[in-house]
Every structure is written in C-alpha cells, then in structure tokens.
Image (cartoon, rainbow, N blue to C red; front, top):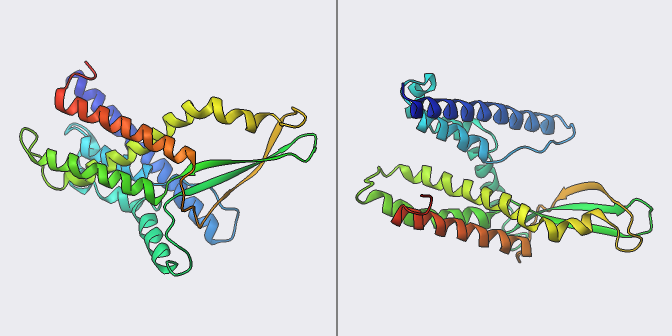
Length: 243
C-alpha cells in the first residue's frame, strides 16, 4: 500500500466515524424533542454528506470499501440530511397559503448589558435556507454537464456527489465569511453602546417564517460562495490555481 492510499484510507475512515458520531447526535436531539425535553441543536446535512463521501472515496484496502455501492445510505440514515429535507419541503408546501415564500432563514442571538442599563442587541446569524440549496443546485448543473464530457467522462449519478460538494462549498463560504465579518460584528456583541460594559448572551431563537429579503450577511456569504466557485472553475479549466 503506497502512502497516498494509506492517507485516503485514513481520511475516509475518519470521515465515516464523524458521520456516525454526528448522525447519532442528530437522532438523540430528535428523541429529546419528541419526548418533550429541551431541544438540542443538531448538525444538518453535513454528517450525511460525510458518510456518503467516505464510502465513495474509500480505497479497496479499507474495510468500509465493501459498502461502496451503498454510498447513498448515510444520506437517509442521518435524520438531519434527506429526512430533514423531505420534512422541510413538506412543511413548506403545507404552509404555503399562510405566508409568502421566504428564501432566507436566520437565527437571532439576543444580548443584554451586564449593568442592566436597558441596552439590548440582536445579532442575526445566517442559517441554512432554501436560497443556499437553490444556489448550490444552480452551481451543480454546469459542473455536472462538464463532468459528463471528455476528458472526465463521469457517470450521470455523480450529479449527487457534485451537489453534495456544492453544499459543502456553501458551508465553507459561511465559515470563511464568519471569520471575515468578525471585526464588523464583534463590537455590538461584546460592549454596550451606552455604558461600554460587557454584553452577555441571554439566548438564541430560530425564525421559523424566515425573511423575504436577505440580510447583509446573506449577501456577503453568497459573494464568497461565488468566489469559491470561480476559483473551482479556474482550477478545473487550467489546473494551475493550486500549483
């Protein structure tokens, strides 16, 4: 076994363990919600994608390679992946007459001054929304078409893998954006504008109805997502970006 195969076997095994850990965590959060306990915060989409990718990239020397043809099972075994997407679509269709279609979802973090001077601050955190899923799907189509042609000549079902990669790229865009936006968002969350005392987080809540208009953070993340896709296309066409 050469070094590259050993590294790939290690990475695929590590990804599969991460999938098992997070998928069990999502099921535990669902169980606590069903029995009326305090709701936890599960990790959506990513665990199922990690499990599917782990089975796809596992070398033949790896024990999990025997499940290569069952790469789609983690997408359904993780309650936060395909089952959550099915529930989300069902919920949106069921409630389509109650409100207009809103493509943006946010989590609101509430902060108050430690000296109780009366100042309060609400920080908007971007959550996975229909807009991000649509953006990933739109970015997937041209990549999939190119993958069907020479010299790649991939099979049609690689569409799902490319879509999974675009979703991961959207998560990466969110992670990078949180770092880039930190200098502009940390001030209001740290110090009171009235008395300059420390602010304290008192809770977070999810906005179930969402918003018809994007927050500036949505626009920023989408811009980073476009930049990452442009970099991907440059590397795909020239092969010189990371050299």
